[in-house]
Length: 389
Image (cartoon, rainbow, N blue to C red; front, top):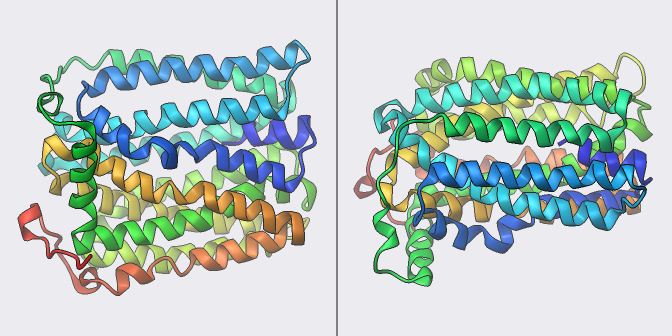
């Protein structure tokens, strides 16, 4: 998240549009192969997918410091590496979200997802801070070698999962196009799922623009060093960690349905503090804004991901997750590209204002759905009201 765009900004002196294009390339795979990836994952054992994609991502990331040491690193190399890692990440993400129900049981999905978000948020606290220091000491391209090592370590941990899955039923009989169509229909023909996808898709469109330009804004307009940028990014992880501990209490207080849209409405405005930051102490107002927003992101993710996993039959989990990610993450490269265009024309700060303001409106699709006043969410597909499509 931090080292790759800083390679472009600090090592290759990329312009705003080029940084936006790099950010778009990082998530473009969700648009390109998001739907077939779900059908393929439903035909494979998910543990094997996790291990193989980790090892492949490690190999791709290692090419960047090697090219830097050889004096041949270019922006085109970064674009290619970002796209390759993105393709592998599509398979990894679809597989891990589909694997969890078989490991912990559907009755413990909220607890399981909350613990995973605790781990992820803890990594987001320490990871960027460590990355900032490594970049300051070793330069950004060399710091990516640490990413390659971490991916290899991840594969070793997944190998240690002893529970084996049976061969998926989806591997027998149906063609790929029919599988993809079934996954799309399951998501888009249900009002609750469709409203969640619309909410998350709009939020990621705006966050794509925001994250593409914040890595330009912080060093060039606020004059932050890589170490300080790492600390600022860590604040988002701190907020996520708080959200992981608060999600159970907030869901009991608000109810499951209301927690989905209130987590966006209440916490997303923290993003507005980032483009309002200036050099000096006001920089850390932006840090507080990121931490505050991070709380809402984790509450939203734990609530809606657990709902989707609980609702979906095992044979459809990969396709459901891939369909959601195709739409939700597919908007992110479009947002990053738009952010780069706005930043090139009007500056990174203006792009951040527009992106943050847009993200604050992401709750509207859910607010206008039956989720608005629901305390408990349905636990089976039969309980859902079909959407009009």
